[in-house]
Image 1 (cartoon, helix red, strand yellow):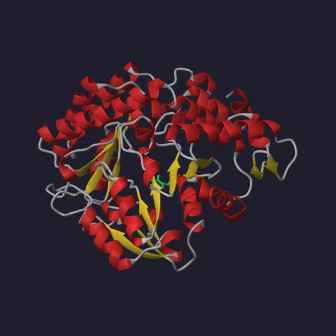
Image 2 (cartoon, protein in one colour):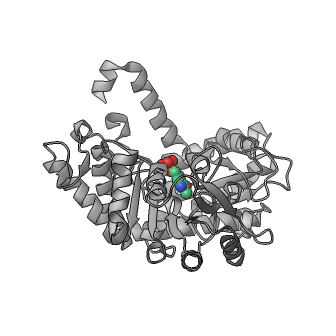
Image 3 (cartoon, protein in one colour):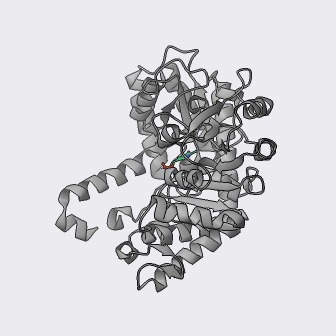
Length: 417
Ligand SMILES: *Cc1c(COP(=O)(O)O)cnc(C)c1O
C-alpha cells in the first residue's frame, strides 16, 4: 500500500484499521467470508479501467479482448460448478441479480410469493422498504410455529390461493435445509416461475452439502461473496430458454458497464470453488456450525428450530432478559462479531430484535476447527449468561486475541493490503 500511504493518509489508516480489526476478532457474521489472496489480487487489477458494456464477443466498446477472456472464464466456471445452462456474471450485487431475475419475467403489479423477512427471508423478497415490495404485489410464506421449519403444505395452500406469477425461494436466516424440489413442484402446479436466491448457501450447494436448486428452478440468483468465498457481487443462472431475457435485464435494463475487475475476481473464486479443497471447506463449515449449535444448546441456549443443517444458527433470546442488540454489542466487546436478527414471531423492532445470527464460513476459512468451536461456544454461552460482566468480557477478549494469533489471517496484509 505504499502508494496509498503516500497519497492519502486518511484512507490508508482506515484500511490498516480494518485489516487489524479483521485479524484480531472472530468473524461470525453468517454472510461474510475471507477471500484468497488471488481473489483479492484480481480485484486490484487494471481491469478496473475498462468499459465492457455488452457480452463477450458482442461489446459496445473496443479493446475488450482480455475482458472477454475473463468474463468467458467466469461464465463457464459458474455453469460447470452449478450444472446450469447459462450464467450472467455481471450483476454488481445480490440485490441486482434478483432485480434482473424479477424483471425478466414480471411486470410492475405482478404478484410474487416470498419468504417473510422476519422468518428468515431477504429484503429483496418483497419487503415494503425495498424495490421488490414497491413494484410487486407480495404474498409471504413463513415457518411453522412448532418447529420453525418451512411448512411445504402451507406454502402450497398459500400459492394456490395467491396465484403468484413467481415464487421466490432462498433465505438469509434459515438454518435448515430448503427443499427446492418441493418448491419447484408447487411452482409448476400453480404455473409460477421459480426463482431461487441461493445467496447464503451457494458455496454449500457448490460443494455438495445442500441440495441444488438448479434442476428445480427457472432462475437461480446468488451473491458471490458469502459461502462461495468470492469478491462482493452477484450472479444469475438460468435455463437456456431464459438466457436472452436474463442477459437483457442485467444490461442494459438495470446496469451499465460491468465491473470487469470484479468479474476477473469472480472467475478466480469460481475456479477455486471447482477444486476438491472447496468441498472439504464446505464440509467443515457445516460441521463447525453443527458443533457450535450442540455446544450452545448443551449450555441451555435456545436455538430457532433446535439446531442447524447449514452454516448458520439463530439464537432465540426470548427466554432471557437480553435483546439481540445488547447481545451483539456484548459479544463485539469480547471480539466475537455477529449480528442481531429477528426470530420467527418477533415482537421487537429490527433495530433491537430477540435473536442473534451466528455463522461459521469466515472462521472456518481461517482454519478454526472442532476444538476451537467448543471453546468459542463456551465463550458465547458465558457472555449470554452474563452480558454485563465487563471483567468476564475482557477475559474472553484476551483469549479471542490469542486464538486469532494462532490462526493468522493474511500475514501479508501489513505490507500489501
Ligand atoms: C445477502 C443476500 C442478498 C443481497 O446481496 P447484496 O450483495 O447485499 O445485494 C440477497 N438475497 C439473499 C437471500 C441474501 O442473503
